[in-house]
Amino acid sequence: MKKSKMLGVTLLEISLVLAIAALIIVLSIRYYQQSNDAESANAALTQITSIASAADSVSNVAGSYVTGLGATAAAAGTTLNSLLSWPGGSASATIGNSPWGSAITVAAVPTQNTYQISFAATPTSICNLLKVRITTNAHFTTAATCAANAAFTYTYTSNP
Image (cartoon, rainbow, N blue to C red):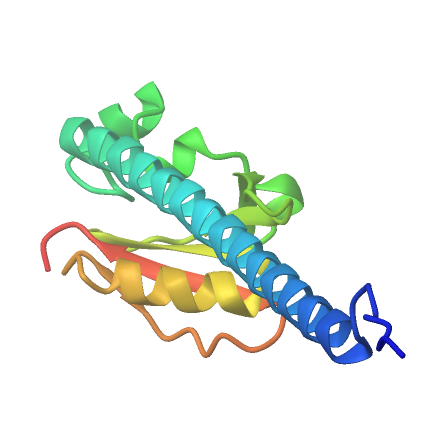
């Protein structure tokens, strides 16, 4: 009598293939999320440097972020306070939206050489990336704790 040879795959082989496929899917999703967070952090950093450049342009013309060169600068609208609209006398003004859709606000009373910007509802993973990247520049300081969907706030100093 001849032994019959079995054809096909065993349950162990199928399980092994499924485990490898699941591992690949999990790793690719994690990589996708990390790349999205990095892209959002880079876009936020671009916004941060644009805000700093615009504020420095105002400061160079006016002499400071607040007082400018006296009444002439304020009348000409060349101080940071005069360029921003403070709705209803509030303590801050919204100047745009972050890459993740939350508001970006600037403090209503910047000092002679500093001002404070806040990104509302910043995801924790993006906050951590921003905190690491922004502290490499001596002009920026932040005390962000990166709690879940907390605001990421930084202070810019023109001459640290």
